[in-house]
Image 1 (cartoon, one colour):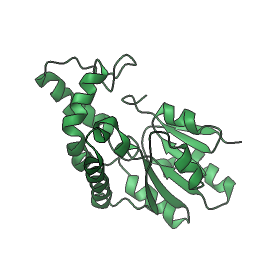
Image 2 (tube, helix red, strand yellow):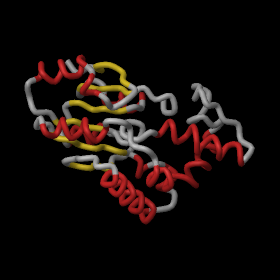
Image 3 (cartoon, one colour):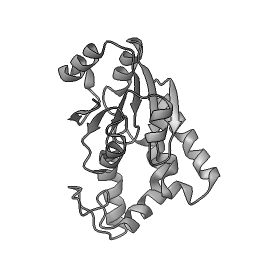
Image 4 (cartoon, rainbow, N blue to C red):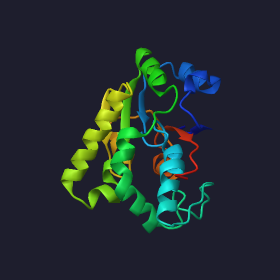
Amino acid sequence: MPKIIYQESSLNLLRNKTYDKFLIEREIIMNIGIDIDGVLTEMEQYILTVGQDFAISHQLQFDPSFSKQSVQGFSNKNDSCSFWDQYWFDYASFVSVKPFASDVIRKLHEEGHRIFLITARTYDSQILKYGISRQQKMEQAIIAWLDKNDIFYDKLIFSNLNKLASCLENKIDIMIDDTVTNIEQLQGYMDLILFSSKSLN
């Protein structure tokens, strides 16, 4: 029965015995789906630094605790959209990679598992509203960031906001994501690892 295995806040999964035990018990080669933003990237830290500076400079309210009443720290969606409208491509180029991300993915690949990076970033409203050229530019930025940070993948998938179709089409056995709504959409179809991310949940 597909299940949510556990919550993890970093990609240092190889040091987690629960995860190792899960892989050993399956004894099969798996198609592993991995989200990018908040799973491979230090998105929360980026928002805490660059986003908070943006809020201060524009005299906007910002909640560094990322309470449920906030939108990624901002007091409303319009303020959050204004931030990402200006900083999406800065983030795409300069956001830090999570510790161990490259090593963990490389090890999973060496063990025979297939790595599918599945991101909906190019379908974000702040990308789509400027048309296909901005969407293509973001795709190129994502590829360049993955290359710069030595992130291996068998396939990179630019999904829409609902990742279920992409996961089913590629026969994903386990999906690693940090957004609760994504987990809810996928629950029951595959095993899931939910990353804890205050900025997105």
